[in-house]
Length: 141
Image 1: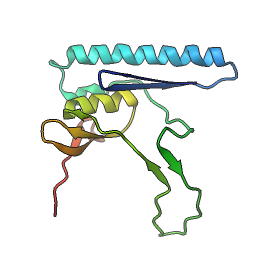
Image 2: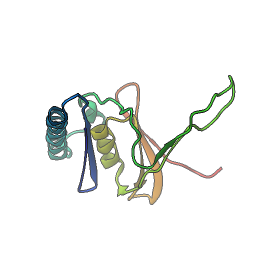
Image 3: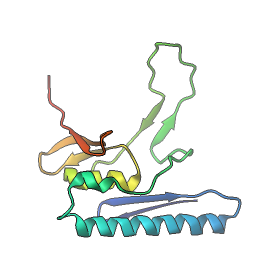
């Protein structure tokens, strides 16, 4: 069971698996409620909390199933050969880097591609090993 909720440019996702569809739905809904609570707390504390402290969320497990817009190609890859095996489309929404970091944490990802509404550029926010956040700002060579 997978539940995806979009509200105010924030995407929340929850997934659970079991043999009982109703039990899976209940567990996925519970996860989604916890995410909503964390989101509300973070938005409320946003003005007082630096972005690097937003990393204190629950773990997230990547789903085995494909998400919308994903394609997978099964191919034998020789050692040293580089092949793109997975393609994913992502709708870019205008937001600040802080909002992108929050969205990344809510999704449980290590990086997040977004359109920076302040600089009018496509950028990537990512989680650093030290628990902080980084921002990749592309420039032309």
